[in-house]
Image (cartoon, rainbow, N blue to C red; front, side, top):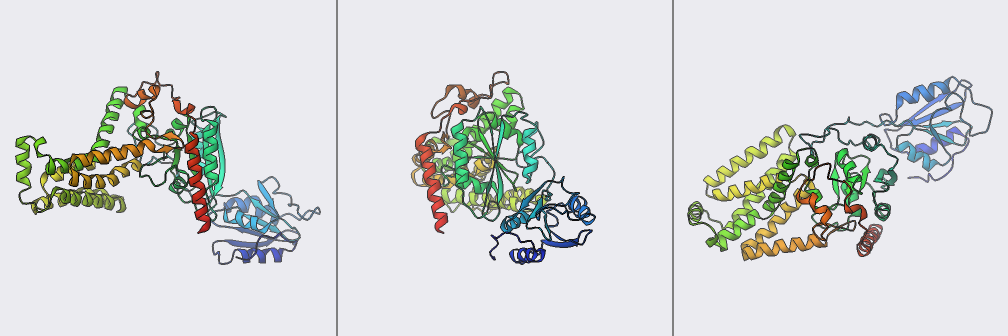
Length: 502
């Protein structure tokens, strides 16, 4: 790219030539030359489809074509369009950045400045119900890829000047707009400062999705457990803002990030607060139980059938033994075959078109399970165990939290196949130790159980009624632990340094 960090000259021909060199091979950028009423040459540079071409013609080009250049300073803008929102630029590099961002640029012969008009209208979809976080009862609107649409969805719910929004720009090439949102008086100032500091340390060529931000600013990016909550629902973001958390909205993706979070907040569904107290509490406990089931059920089956047959009732043991008479593989290999096949079917259902994806995953599981049982490759009890495990994983309300049990299931199965229930317990204890050490912006991941916070425990085990729920947990009073903050800073600086080295 030629040197564009220079100022415009008074000659229109030279300015157009310089912009064409800076925007070489940019087929989508249009240079529209025309003349004013007194013959003064002009040129409009814009991106069709990204810039609002209709507004550009009505508010800028037509008024200019019928007006004459005023006899004032060389950088003045002719009358007729002075009421439009624009930015005066003298640097070519800044002008190129504005053009690439969708702002139409105007050049006038004899003027050593250019004007970028705020007439950006990118293509965007309308507000729709989130597919990944659908609810039976609750709001139906969801975030879109346009930041200008998402921010009003929050403002119309939180009509208060305490709702603060801080804008940042990240990505060397994408120059993605990032907005950090928090509630003044509820979010701790040190938490706001820490989130902003980590965002400002991000040095990446491009930010295309919220996961790219999450990997940069998480306390432990190599942990399988998510340390930020991705959500498409404005009501979920607003509820977390009122609890003292921080939200990060990224232009170009419908997923907002919420931090800090705990394991139990990831296991709660937004519908818990839109349904009856008793039913919400029952479903919450059911969710907790089946989260454990999705993690250890295949491992427990392998351990019991391989090492601890005395734990199985005699009649059931005889039935299991009869079903495994012609199976050539041990229980561990049998479980690995079924689990890997089930994961492949689940991934295929996601990647296929929506019209056939669900049918392929369900029919494929039934057909393959029946065929494998008839062929003597796997036993019927193992098919039942894997099916229950898959259904349990579907009960997890957050997709990002459903991934860790799928990953950790395999090493725990290997431990169960070699050491029995002792191996299962060792794997489970190792996971709990990791969770106890994990932090989300200084907040313990197992909070409020570890460490214990009695006031918040009621919202973990029970869903309190609205008239008992203050919606202001101790998170708002949670100070950022210095050792964790320093560790996060060290990780960020180290990764930033590696990025520079590359």
